[in-house]
Length: 180
Image (cartoon, rainbow, N blue to C red; front, side, top):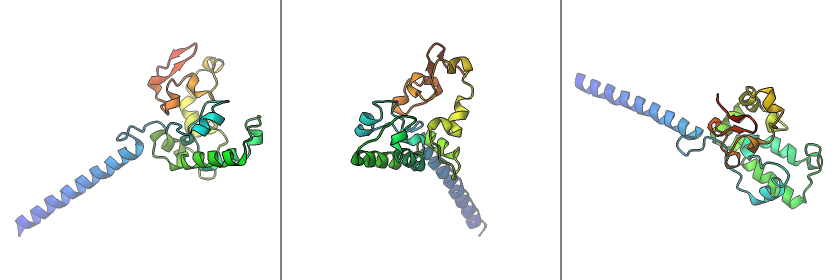
């Protein structure tokens, strides 16, 4: 009987240990190490590239929640002081692309971090107003900010267009590589 109890204890312990490993593994999967999705999903919509990237950096949808993208796309007549109106079909198609791929629908690590820094009652109107973004950029010296714009990602993030915002890939114009 004691042997049976010992075997049961060993099996139960193994199940608990391996279950914990499985849970930890699923966390890693969600936050990127299994699929390599540590940044944000790259833009993969040609209409978005044609219409939006014609005027500014093609911000990845995973940098804002769906509610922010819907709000932004609902007022293109005053898009950061510019008229960016589109015909209804293009506006609807782009709104759906942005909403479907928004940060709150993404398992990419940086998208998850963006979402964690936004309260459920908040609808940020730009990426630069998100808490996670502000924290990541608070160490940037004033002399650097006089030369670059925080809303122009690819100025410093050399692989921003691929969705990678790693500190190892930062090269600030007039300042050089970012050393933390």
